[in-house]
Image (cartoon, rainbow, N blue to C red; front, side, top):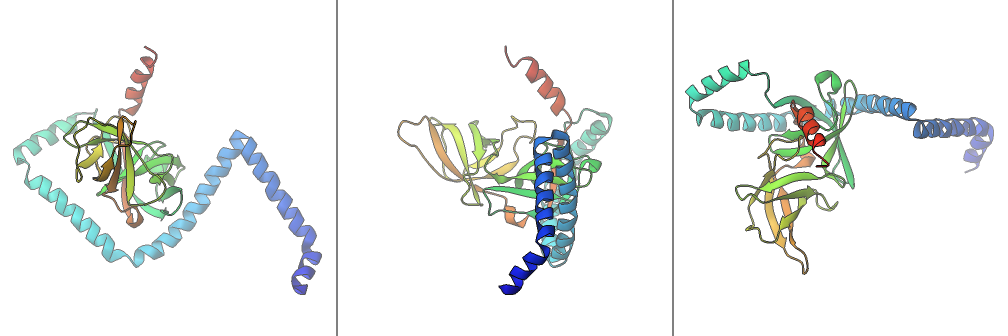
Length: 276
């Protein structure tokens, strides 16, 4: 303890100077928009490089799991291919190469940082705007939805995980037409709540929940999970539904960022008619 006190006595002025410098910089960044953007961008770059180095080491010890994941996805894609009329595929591919109005493009990225134990969990990706990733793009993987891009710089992107209290994802009960909003209650990282589904809906345990396609972030029919339980509370016109996620967010390795090429056009026409 004596040595610690002597250290502060000897270097107290330096510690005080550093503390005041950090305090001033934080105040400048907080109350000035341009400086705040510079601070956020610089922080993302610095943290992204650290996460990248740590993740490279982690990935080395998980090559087997990654290989299994890729093999499973390849098997799923082959199954889809073999169950499709090859002539129809050829005809469709020919049309698609001539069509410049395809709605969705997909950008692959690697997860280099991830959390699941906080109230507001985030994910860092190893690609940014230079790869075509932008704010408010949806993120998925082979098993389902992952989140929505919140911040992006040249080489990294930060995603709000589905395990984030502010997330709201439009979802539907597959083949039944009923829809609502998915949100996380901050407790179990394997489950989310589906709210605003009418009490008159015909639902049952095990029903598949998919994206509704009502937002510009996700195409329709991307798997979210299955109904684990549901109930009605007195005086409420909608079900309380708990959904078991199809995706294990704790095991994310590679993801697809969805670029909706028609998002701007859709938002523009919706904005024009918003007050009508």
